[in-house]
Amino acid sequence: MGRIFSGLQPTGNFHLGNYLGALRNWVAMQKEHESFFCLVDLHALTTLPEPSKLRSNVREIVAVYLAAGIDPERSYIFPQSAVSAHCELGWILSCLTPLGWLNRMTQFKEKAGKQREQANLGLYAYPVLQAADILAYRATHVPVGEDQKQHLELVRDIAGAFNRQYQVDYFPLPEPVILKTAARVMSLRDGSVKMSKSDPSEYSRIQFSDDPDAIALKIRKAKTDPDPIAGDPKAMENRLEALNLLGIYGALSDQSLDAVCREFEGQNFSHFKQKLTELLINTLEPIRQKMTVFLKNPERLDAILEKGSQKARDLACTHMNEIKDIVGLLKA
Image 1 (cartoon, rainbow, N blue to C red):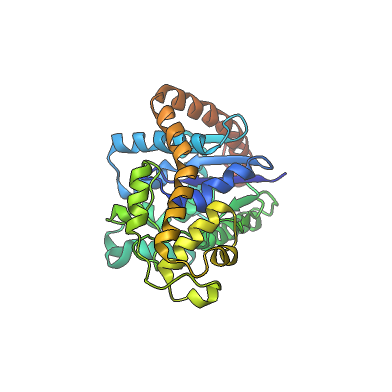
Image 2 (image 1 turned 90 degrees about the horizontal axis):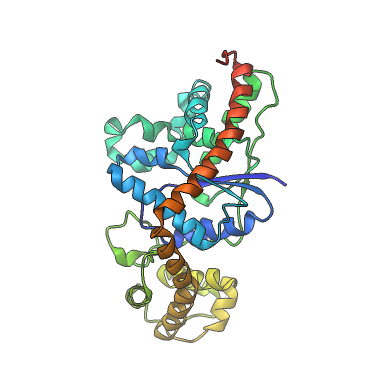
């Protein structure tokens, strides 16, 4: 049984893309792996969120985790900031990471844009802290989407650099888990960009706080085209918004895109949208209701986080003592 590490930023507005791309798969994976599901609140600081909003976002994501089926008795659920080993190891690893490696990170270039000189160090060094997140627990596997594969390659490079520098075989080189059932969910308004909480239009995404009426409205307004659904996905390659909705239906119903196209071949999107709306509501509404119950009991959420944090600290502290001995630091 391998050890899984993954996490989400507590930036609020948890949406369908987060669920289909990550969380749904974590629920299944926890049954077969020792699983660490972190709330990466230190990474969230790169955008300088308002403090009270950050705290409420952490509790909201914990509620989502629990409502979706993450079991705190089976998995470690904890905020990144509760385990000091993340920052301690982050510094050690930063001393082994050449600037050239970080300069190749496309995510920094995309987020910093033309304001690279004004971007904060946290955003630039983000991948090193991400490596520490994973390696602090000597995780063997990391579930990743396409946009995170480059970061995991860097984690493997940093782990290898540590092992070579100190002539040890200490860190495993974590393997990516590319889940076949992970869906790449695009914006409901523009099929060429991912569904994102940063999009100014709320109609671009389905949020977990949306009630059935809101979901129905967003799907009605979702961009498609006037042509009927083709029975072969290859015939729809240039119909990005249409393919996105069909892909969402397939992911929710555990069907291939081919199967969905065959099911709705020749039908128009007004009929298909009704079916997609029903499927979305049947899937998400029970989670939303459970989430609401959890959020009414913040003390319970905090207790779950503290329990998970203590278990994570115990393991990470053991590893940090071993790492300090390897690099020559005295243990107080």
